[in-house]
Image 1 (spheres, rainbow, N blue to C red):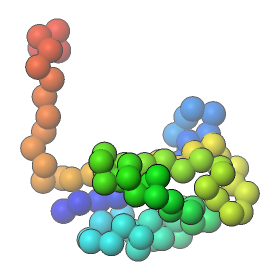
Image 2 (image 1 turned 30 degrees about the vertical axis):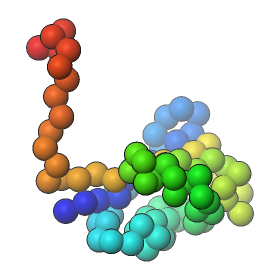
Image 3 (image 1 turned 180 degrees about the vertical axis):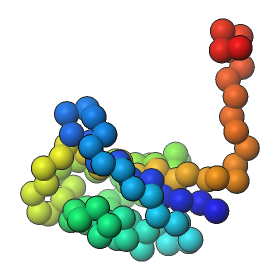
Image 4 (image 1 turned 90 degrees about the horizontal axis):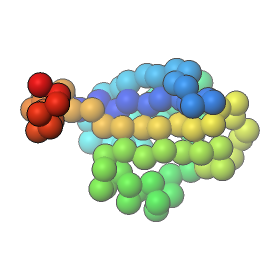
Length: 94
């Protein structure tokens, strides 16, 4: 099952984070996360859609919110619990 993880970042620190189930609609999951975190919903632009399609993550700055916010950035990322764990091939990591 995939989940959507959101992090509120202020002064380069994670202030708050939440997760919700990501069934099939990113828009509904983002709306649910914003409601849960009690923040306004950001504008989802084509830049965000491109980043989501390529990397399964994107971030929103203060400029992407219509209302004023007290944090610097909102980052969202897809987390797949069923995905195989990735290991580094660097020998220094043992």
